[in-house]
Image 1 (tube, rainbow, N blue to C red):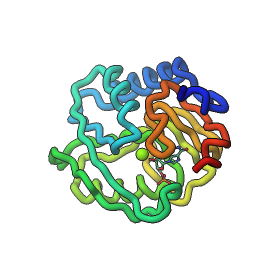
Image 2: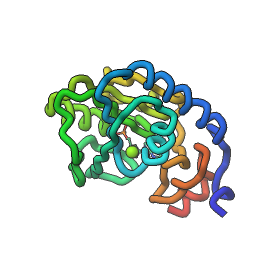
Image 3: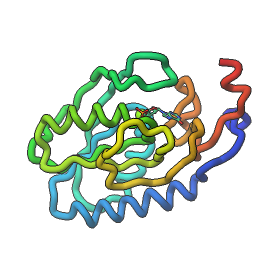
Image 4: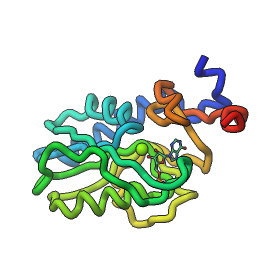
Length: 182
Ligand code: IMP
Ligand code: MG
């Protein structure tokens, strides 16, 4: 069982649900009457965006990007390559990037630079988890944040370890032996 690899549940399914509803309400108010596009990065943020859009009460569109980062798999280098680009034009639109987690901030920093050059009306970020202890890039336009988390590696609710554990309904910390097995 997947659950047996989890040391501790950091954020429960209920806590996530409650927070997502709060974020949805705030976004619905702030972007009322605007042309809103939610942009998400595959694959980790898929669960978050799927739940989030169902609690946003204003019209919106969604679009996806896929990026790959070079360098060792556990650390982000910030050197990323777009594997799948947006399908829609975002010129003059209000773009909100929906991300699962911000760690060093390098990935998001790249994404913001990339999207800003396409001249959206506004560009902001909605992130579920903020691991700010490891931040390298500051001044990211984080408009909405779910939870601050400590410097621990988490899985579940879209987040993976070697592509596993994304389907856990909560955010949890893995048992040590899972890493030690590699
Ligand atoms: P950053 O560029 O260092 O901010 O890295 C962001 C990306 O690293 C996220 O989108 C995740 O894919 C991955 N990541 C960072 N921390 C974790 C974690 O604790 N669990 C799972 N993935 C993580
Ligand atoms: Mg991600």
